[in-house]
Structure formats: structure tokens, C-alpha cells
Amino acid sequence: MSAGEAAGTGDPPPPLPPAAAAIASGYAFAGQALDLGALLWDGRCRPDAPIRIPLPVLNRHGLVAGATGTGKTKTLQLIAEQLSAQGVPVFLADVKGDLSGIARPGRRDERVLGRAGEVGQVWAATGFPAEFLALGGLGHGIPVRATITSFGPVLLAKVLQLNQTQEQSLGLIFHYADTKGLELIDLKDLRAVVAFLTSDEGRAELKDIGGLSTATAGVILRSLTAFEAQDMADFFGEPEFDTADLLRTAPDGRGVVSVLELPAVQDKPLLFSTFLMWLLADLFHDLPEIGDADKPKLVFFFDEAHLLFNDASKAFLESITQTVRLIRSKGVGVFFVTQTPKDVPSDVLAQLGNRVQHALRAFTPEDQKALRATVRTFPNSSYDLEELLTGLGTGEAVVTVLSERGAPTPVAATRLRAPESLMGPVDAAELDEAVRTSALHGRYAQAVDRESAYEKLRRTPAAGPKAATRAGPKAATGAGKPSPDEEPSLVEQVVSSGMFRSLARSVGTQLGREITRSLFGTARRRR
Image (cartoon, rainbow, N blue to C red; front, side, top):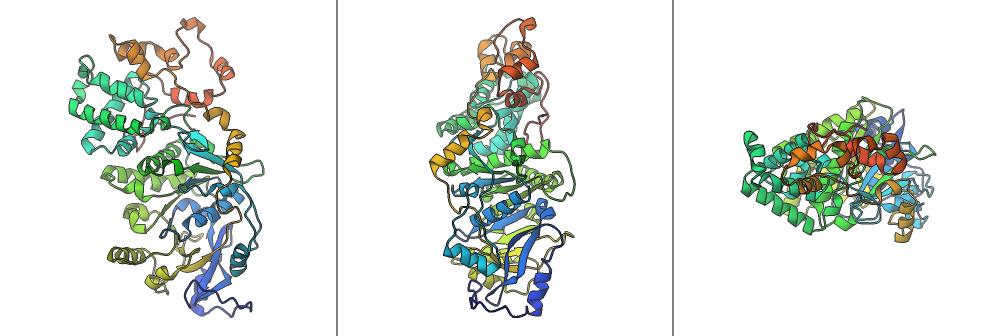
């Protein structure tokens, strides 16, 4: 009998064999834990041997892997539900568009109740507090935008697929804009600065620090044009999304599940994977250190993770590794979701203490090689993992997590519990209504195009950025050109603009002073 077959007799389970009992004891945690499912042993599902993961170790990161159609999405939903119930906010990247159902109670049917009975789960249809987001407003959710300045040269070079020399030149352009107070809000701002630095007047500006060749500037400008032609302009601009909004809890104390809708950009995988890295980098340099805690501040699920690592430079991979290593001390757990562990670089994989490995296929020599490589990433086990990983059914996985002491638990073949929320998307009209009534709608729904580098360089073609810098903070707020004594106070600006908080984040770095940048070249901001 395979691992996917249940005994189904209804008789009390026989005592666990010693090897199975040893595995079960590794998951008998004393503190708060999430219930993943029940142990599979000799083809039987053993509800008397629950497989769990301690809540405090969720900031030690994890991996959810498996072939297409093996149940990875439902695993994300299952973990997200229980985190929310424990008061932990969750971020989910919804690549296929079927995670919005987490906000609505699930449907009671024979299949769900059958799975619940097999694993000893008391199933109750439950919806969870959710916020729906969409990159640049392409989709039904609250628009998530970033300014070019905060996105930074390293991540932007990744999106534009620039080589190392071009990336270094882009970094030089950002450095110049930062020091001259030329805020790069959207793509036209960056194009304007590049054009200025290759003009007769601007060429001398970078002469002492290496300059910008016409050929490299041409590549960057062409890449920006092609990028914009694919309807990418909406992703960059204001109001910029405040990643602190991912850390909210509902009035009843449950964590808010932020679902980023991505089906509208499925054909732009490099963009959304890099945008997810921006969100993570922004959290990294904004959150305080908290060390080990009773539960995470946020658990972040990074779907289609292999896209982030494809063709990445050594420096880029080092930045990812360092971010993953250090962000756990700020209370953030990161789960990478992909097909096989080999999609994740070894230095990053080494940081992922919690593993849920769904079935793998071995139809080709490449598949067989990937299978053997996956087996080598697990601790020693009493299972024949090569046979087990190819025989798992949908909704079954091989699990190993960190114990409360931080040691790896025994490898456990597991039949996973059934999610209690709706396993599928909610109706589009219902989704739109949820977005319109969201507390975030008034802050982010309407795009704003204030004065920035493009307008300053157009307004002062003769004097260049020096005159733009002299225009001062008043010009940066886009509030016109009244005399200094007519400038409204900060309080007046707050009263007059409901979106001031998000705009203030971008304006916060003083003009004329270089912006401090983090590991990924993203701009540091103070909230």
C-alpha cells in the first residue's frame, strides 16, 4: 500500500511501531504550535501522531516545495489560517489567483470531512481577516506601488536585466540623483536624469566619479522604454505602499492576511519576484531588532522563488542571503515556495529550518537528478525518501521542522489537514467590494504625480539640478510656488491631505543630502 492510501477501517489504530513512535515524539511540543497533519506510516494515516510546528520557530524561515498540482497552495493556505488565528499577520503572494478564498468560510463536503476524519481534525468552516493587494493596481486589489528612489538601483537592474557594468552605472545615476535632491518617483524621472547626464551640460557632473558612457546610457534608456511599453509604468509612483500595513491585526486579535494578487502579471515573473524582494528589503531595514519572541511579527510567503534567483549576480545572491539571515531577528519569517530545493541557492537553503516537501516527479533524467539532490537535503531518515517522494499523493508531504530547542525534528511523511477557509477564489464583485471598503483604499487607490526630477529638469534646463535643488522642499511637495512665508505648516498639510502619510515617507529624506541605502540599494526611510 502506498503512502497515499488510508486504511479507512474505522477501527482504533494499533500501537505505533517503535520507529514511528520515535518520529511522533519529535513533534510533541509543549508550547503553542501549528497543526500540519498526521503521520503516515506503512500506508496508514495515524491521527494519534500529529505533526506540528512550534509557533516561535516560524521566524526561522522555511521551504514549501513540490511538483505542480501536489498541493503547495493549499499548504500555504493551511499555514496562513493558523498563523492568523494565533494573531500573526501573514503575507501571501497569490500567483494563480485562488488564495482570495481565505477571507470566506470553506464549503463542507465529503472530501473535506473525509480528510479531516483521517487526520483527526475538528473541521469548522472559517473565514479570516484579509486585505487584497495588486501590483500597480493591475487587478482587483489595493494598488501596491514603489518609487524608483526607494526601489533602488540593484533591484531595478535585476528587473531591467542589466549586466554588471550597466548595473554599476545605474548605481552611479542613483547616487547623483540622491545627492542633488532629484527625487526619482517614476520611470520618466529616471529617464530625465539619464538624459541630462549624457547631455552637453550634464556630462561633466559625473566626470570625477567615472562618468556615464553614451552606450551604457543608451542601453538603460532602451530598457526603460521597453519596460514601460509592457505597461510597467504603473508599478512605480506614489502613493508608495507602506510595508508597515502588512503588520496589522484585526479587532478580534487575529492577524490580517495580506493577499497580493499576481495573475495579471503572470507573464512578467521577473517583475513580481523582484517586487516581492523589495517588500522584504523594506521590512528588513525598517523593523527594529527583537530577537527570539513567542511568535513572529509577520510570516512572508515568497511564491515562485526560483525566479528571483535565476541569472542573479553573486552580489545579488549575497544580499538575499544576508537579508534572510538577519531578518529573523526582527521577527519576520520567510517561506520560499518553489518546485525543488535545488531552485534555491545552498547559502539561502541553509537558512530555511522548516521544510514541507510535496511529491516530486521523476520522468526524465533531469527529474531523477533533482530527486536525488532533494533527498540529500534532508536529515537521515528511516524512510526510503526517493520512493516516498515519488509516491506521495496530493495534500501529502515530507515534513521536518525545528523543535522548540532549535534542533531538526525527525523526517515525517504527513497527510496534511484541510484548510477551513474557501479553497478557491471569491467572486470578483465580492472582491471589489472588499477593496472599496478597505481602510487602505483612501490612502492608496488614487495615483499621485507630484513634482520630482522630471519636472525640475524641465523647468530649469539652463541651470540644471543646482537650480532645482535651490527650489527646496516646497517644490518637492508639488504645492506650487508661493513665497516661503506662505508655506503651509505640517499640521495644515496633514489636515488638507488624506494621503499625506504615504507621501511624507517619500519626501522624508531631505533634499540635497544623500539617501542612505540598504543591502539592496533600497532607500532607507523613517516612519
